[in-house]
Each structure stands twice: as structure tokens, then as C-alpha cells.
Image (cartoon, rainbow, N blue to C red):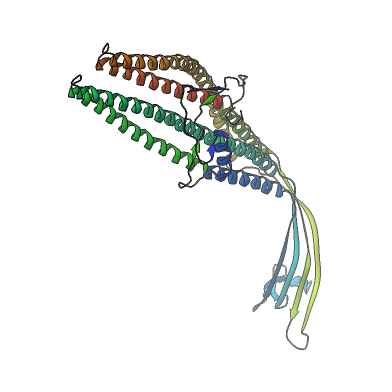
Length: 435
């Protein structure tokens, strides 16, 4: 672990809890509302998978009905049923049944083979895996945003430290110039120059302080904390240059590959449902009641009824609907293959760019660290020479500007390094790995 910004900066010890980056991430994992929503989506996909499997279980329904016939149904009977000598083709109407009819039964239905059900089970299983990957993607995005905000907050904190140090130097220089002015060794214009510089530093400090608070508010929002919470972060910017560089499939590629599996299963299910039958088992057991409410033969009698059977269903022609759906899946699979190639190429390009940026930024950090130390030394020597009358005010201001430029260059290099390091961890699927 190498600490950056180790340039004699000693931030004051906060009285509140100091949050590390990992603590911020752990808190967000529990309290971030976007992650909670995605957890619910994952639970929803689990329930859909169980729903698909439940279609294999038998279904039992209870049915009951009562009918009262105000007019009994008619049926035509051939006259030959009553008189063999009657002419063929002549009929006589007759009413059958009784006015009261009661039916109560239990019906059982169970699929023995249904390619659509088995396809739905496999599809929802893959959809559940896809939901898990999308949850990981959401977690990765939240971690990325929190780390980015945390690093920005650290940079602004150190920028405030630089500004406080520069403001102290400016106030000290202003006091010296005012003293020289009182002894007629400096002009009022010199005093005004230092006052202008001091005012600019104060304005910059207030602007930076406001930006820092905005970043902290955004960080609290991502963590699920209230805006009233006094959040204090660890100001020490640390980094490690030791993490796995082995190839690891990114979440984007895993998502595309899982989508490919899902499309293949959907296509196979459509093909099977097009050529294979469905077989169902069914059974009914119950009772039927007949009643007559007229004297002298009023009655209400019940008779049992029960049967079982197997039903086979095969689609002969459905208007080429299934064929069109299969063709759609083929096009979707082609697009998925193109998407996989696109994501793979894009990831390789981003890895190369991030590695280059990180190497350059690392070298710049080391160089700018030495430049700050040199600029501080030059500034102190120039101040000493100015007191001795060897250097003028312009030399002091130039040295001061050089120091501030070195400080800003250092901060920019650190920002570039942290951004590149964060991007590399994301691309290598190592963003959620604890150091």
C-alpha cells in the first residue's frame, strides 16, 4: 500500500466516524434503493421459475351446479321406436328429464408431456440466471459510482488543504509587503497584487468547499444515508498496483452469452411445439342428482359418476404462426452474435486505453510529486531572497504560481490514475473484490 499526497499534509482529526471506501460500499449494498429494487426483480424471477415448474403438478378443481328447468328439453323420437309398422322418417317430440338437476364433482388434470411447459421451465431458469447477472451489474455500477464519488471527495479535500496552505503563504506575504510599504520599500500596487491574489484564493477555497459538500451529499444519497448525517471520509488516498491481470469474462459478456442461451431455448421450444403433441391425463369423480317436486312421485335421488382418460393434442396447421416466430428468433440470435462480438471488441479497446492511461498517470504522479517539493523549495528560497532584496515581488508571484500549478498538476494526475484504476477493475470484473 503506497500513500499518495504524502507531502507533509496533516489534516485535522475528525471527531465523527471516518468512513473508508469499503465501509461506504458495504453500507450501499444494504441501503441503496436501486439495489433493493434489483433484489426484488431477482426474487420475482425466482417466483416465475417456480410458477413454470408448478405447471407440471396436477390441478384439481371442484365444480357444482344446480339447474331448474322451467321447460324440460325436447327430443325427437322416430315413430318406429313405438310401432315397427310406422313409416320410416316420421318422428314424435318428447320431453325427457326432471326439473331439478344437481351436479357436483372433482376434476383432475395433469400434463404427461407438454414441450411448451418444459421449454418454459428451462427459459425461466435461464431468465433467473440473467436476473442474477443484471443484479451483479447493478451492484457493480453502484460500487463504481460510489468509488468515483469517494475519490472525487478525497481529491477536493486535498485541494482544500493545498488552498489553505497557499492562503497562509499569501497572507504571510501580504503582511511582509505591507510592512515594506510602510517603510516605503514597496509600492501600493504591490500590496494590491497580493490582496487580489489572496481574495482569489479565498474565493477558490469557498468554491472548492461547496463542491466538496455536493460530492459528499451525492455519496450519502448513494449510500442511502440522510442528508443530515455528518459524513467524514478517509483523506489518505491509497492505491495498490497488485491485482490479478488474468483474463476474466466481464458481466456484459456474461449477460450477452446468457441471452444467447435464452434465445436458443425459446427457438427449440417453438420447434418442438410445432412437431410434437401434448399429452394430458384427466379424471372426474362426482355425483349427479335428479329431483321431481310434484305429487305423488316427488323425489331427489343422487347417482355417482366417475371416469378417467388421456387426451392427445397435435396441431396440424396454425397459419404458419410458429414458423414466423422461429424466423424471428433466428434474427434475434444473429443480432446477439453481433452484440457479443461488439462487446468483446469494445472491452479489449477499453482495457488497452485504461492500461495506457494508468501507466502514464502513475509516471505523472511520481514526477509531479517531485515537482511540488521542488516548487516549495523554490518558493521558500525566493521569499528569502525577496527579504534580502535580491528578488522582487514578480519573482515571488511567479514562484507562487509555479507551486500552485505543480499542485494542480499533481491532483490532475491522481484523478487520472484513480479513474483508470477504477475502470480497469471494472473491465476485469474485479470491482467488487475487497483489497
